[in-house]
Image (cartoon, rainbow, N blue to C red):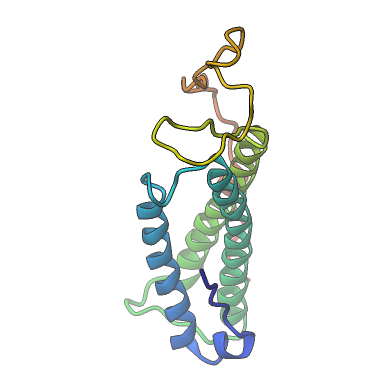
Length: 177
């Protein structure tokens, strides 16, 4: 499997290249969803572990992207390089934008943290050989060889709902830049 990497110069050459990167990201997420639907793209716990680690890293990267988008528009506004198609109050539009971006940043940061915790939780989980699998076993301690070894299914109950504290993005940032 090859990994295409964007050259920083090529990735930042113009707005069209930036839009192509995000289009490619969307398509790669679709590919990942198809791959993780089951075999043959997902057969080992180590693959789930790797996917969770990459998702955690990507979520933290999206937080940075959101911050940079916010900084860009606020800088453009400060330099009087923005207008509104419908003549609406630009300060109100950008204030709503900044609140939404801050909310998205909290969500992506939370996603990164949760994916990292999920990855950590399965770091010692290994697959057992299947009857139709002709590979050598990963361990000699299989349920058939060790009757005292109990194979348990993970607890998949949803965590109890908590009352969420008021998010920081709900606080007013003030108008203007």
